[in-house]
Length: 143
Image 1 (tube, one colour):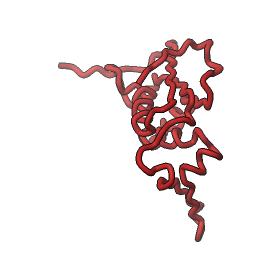
Image 2 (cartoon, rainbow, N blue to C red; image 1 turned 45 degrees about the vertical axis):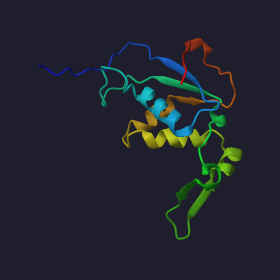
Image 3 (spheres, rainbow, N blue to C red; image 1 turned 90 degrees about the horizontal axis):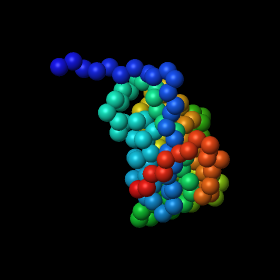
């Protein structure tokens, strides 16, 4: 049996999806979004082909975390200089950058290749229940 090698389709429109994230758990939501963004749920998936979809996430700041992660979970960045470690908890991140929590969770679930930033550009995070992408007619996904 011959293996099918899918190719990038030149003049096709990319699909748009939307999810309302209010009240959903962070990790479970991030895995679903990462799978849909890369089209890994499709039969003709190939990691080198760029036929990926767009995703609009509504109420991205209202995702929930289980247990005590609101106080205990830390996001760490380092400037590569001595003493350059910065730690930010989820509680303070919700005040300063509310959509960054979901974006970092999705970013961590994508492969660490040159396509990662291209996929993240197709992720649109909104902090309210409406969006400006109505002209693209996104499909609503319920989880």
